[in-house]
Image 1: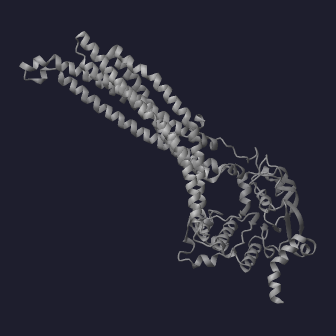
Image 2: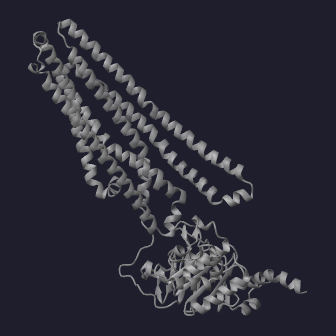
Image 3: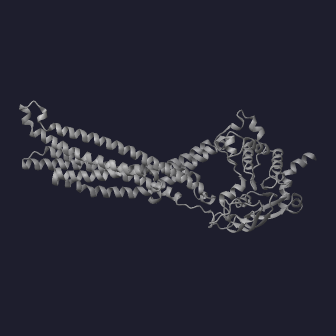
Length: 588
């Protein structure tokens, strides 16, 4: 796991090395300064008699020690500032690369991979989890080096100055280590639960914000508040338990801190008085080193606490990074799609290998290039699942799907999807201008081509009615355009690709029948050689197709023209008459 995460350091390796280097230099100076102060104090005591008869301070050795002390302090400050600057650069850069690697990895995922992770979970991993790892890395490149080095140097200097008294500091280390280990062991499972509940909380917020219009139209604000409170309270309970455990760290450290200092002063004074020696300077500096030792232990415990919190975040990030896409290019992929012919040969499909039954079964279908095919069927009849196999959004479980006479698994995925354009059931526009959204179909499209595509998709008229026309800004998710306008813009975007296969997955459901008919007429004129597959709920959207496929329960129930199916197929006939009953009643 750590090896995979470390790959995101990349160009920030130098900063990650320089920060600990300057930290070590800073610590060495901080540990030497108390020793210089002892020497300075003893120099003052030694030359105090000289001060009585000499008015020239230069004759004393105090000035030299003072200059050395000042120089060491300035150097320590400089090293600390440089260590902080390199640490900030390294941790922020590491987090930037980590977010980028996560985002790029998600872009490579197949629909099957994305189904494995919820949207809210992926968002949490790229934000909260990366931030936790960033803070942890910042602690590692600075505090994780500073504290052990400070601890070792302070212990050594404590023995140099205080001799046997330094063993008091050594004696408490095992006790603190055991307590720290117990706290970490009990806190880790709680943090694992906490981050899962973060996902649930984010999912609740995301659903509420995305469906705000529905929430308000059904006056369900109070219900949403209760649902959010439940998720938030559950998160709070577990987080409080984890924080309560970690909170023991500080008082335990303080207890040992003051206990050790009291012991050092008591024992030192006892032996000093007993032996008749003045060890004031030694005790005072031993107290300083004792503070450094215990503060180092406290900081080490804080580093471990931060690492404890971020370990679960690191595991969740690594889970995404090590996930491999279920769709791969073959060794020698085909880059050219010859034509728009489509063949389903004994195809069966299920979304998961562990699923109990197939979503599609025994699909045998052959579509000629340039043919217009309508697909109709009830909700859950697997219409969308069928067309998802054409652009290889999923791989078949059994059989094969061919486009242009070749199995879709033989193609380069990008090349295949460039020639198989899909207007999805859930239309999606991105924040930006209308032109920027349309150029997703062809980034090099001219203004004339954009206007032509919109004219065929019956979008040109309403686009020109906006004050800024094609430069009108689309809000996130296309919230400032209607459902029908959004569908027509998505169709225009697909037309700009000039694909060999065009799939409209119920993408005219929000437009009226007249506009629907004009769009189909435009498609026939603009893309005569393109194979067009139209999934629809209305029979009027498919009745002029060359052939209509009736889906039922994941199987092809019937194939034929509008007239043939009216006579021979009960499902199609029932749908047609139920949709046209009102018109006949009016005529009667």
